[in-house]
Image 1 (tube, rainbow, N blue to C red):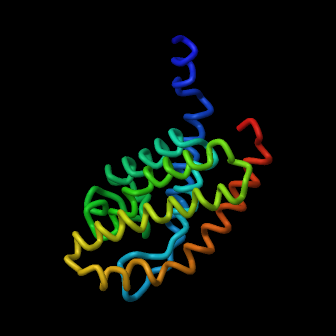
Image 2: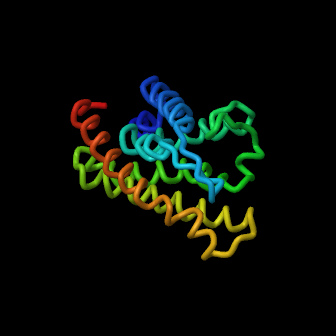
Image 3: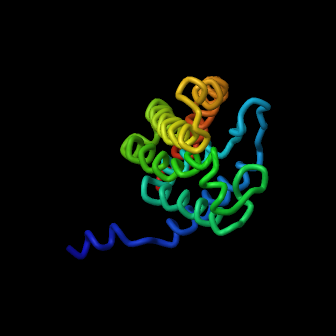
Length: 184
């Protein structure tokens, strides 16, 4: 029983990784390309949101993205275009942001035993991206009252190529980090 308790203990390393990935997600959210036909910009945040679970593990990744969302919800300008506040989470892009902790958690679980495999890292990224699309698309439909077809045209199709590239680059990056820091 005591050894089980030690495994669930939050370590200093986990707290540092949590803060690090919350910060990386915040900074990478600002690297955004707005699209004239969609309120959803292309940005790099998903690379670090999903990668947080692959590198630091499912729970720490989940917590890091939860910290990112909470910091933004209270008004810190950590969301895309230096936005913050609860209204952003209720806006058209809120579903994508709220998907980050779950995407990180799932990606972390998928890769936890095979973190050093680029194929498993890619599978983790792919799963995380699907979760972001699912939550984001459903929330966008709800918040804008668009139908599924219009939402897919605005929120899915324009992002497939860049998300594929981000998934490949993120997979290679995470695999290299995980290989370099084997006892991370």
